[in-house]
Image 1: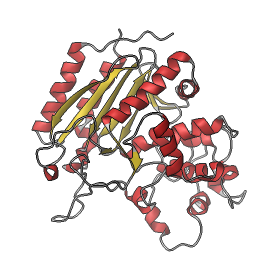
Image 2: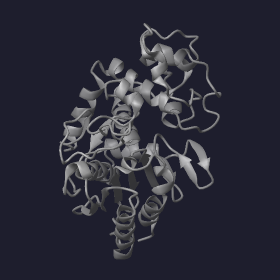
Image 3: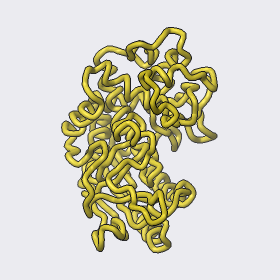
Image 4: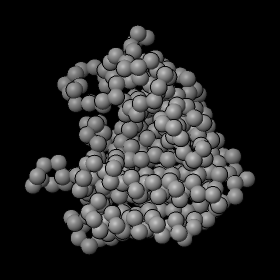
Length: 347
């Protein structure tokens, strides 16, 4: 049985100070950090404004953020987990889940496990724009591309595999990806989570201005490839709130503590599949740190989610960091480092 460990005031104070400093220096317009354990009420640290377009609206638990690659763990990963309970296995080749993929297609041999662990060997550049006006189905086009590495031999972060899973799940489950995901989210009490586009309002954080003088992306997916797929994709496109991220994290951690289905899937996903760098491994979708005790994932727009099943802790970061800067990976490093340190701290 998991014994939950409360957050220390020092850790929360450091996180608040860092978020305030990032807001003050223009790294982010504002943001929210959600934190808690699965058996306590969530806490929220907020700073700044949603964005200048939203007036003086302050970010809070119900502000919607484009979470970019958190889509992989909020939608595709749990849908794979529930689908495994219905039949296919982690070692099923992608071609067996899709119609019309020839046995000789290089990408067709890649397995579900290799996609989730980013060891698929598929092309690293996503570039769905190159397929405009091609008559073949997208899955067929992606699978026909030459591999850049032997599947299963090394780690490289690749969106194309999750795009393929986002195409394969609807064929296997006979329902659209957004329908499958919405049903899952509603079951978890995530009423404000959806694939984009979403309606613009002061409760939705805008992201990047692509052209000087032009409007910002606001309610539209920031990821170009997700936008080309109408906002519904296996790798990006989801909008959610800090409150809904707490609901998601709470369900996973409580299920882990009680041996529930999604908790067992989380446990299986926290087995190392490939080394990213010394001290960091890739599980199934999640990055594993702290000796395998913490699972986390980032989103390019300025979001992160951390889970620590052994202590029952979770932490979510929601910002629209791409509002000001594209080089947000470096700029967000201090906040993300503090978050990981706080989550992995011994009780």
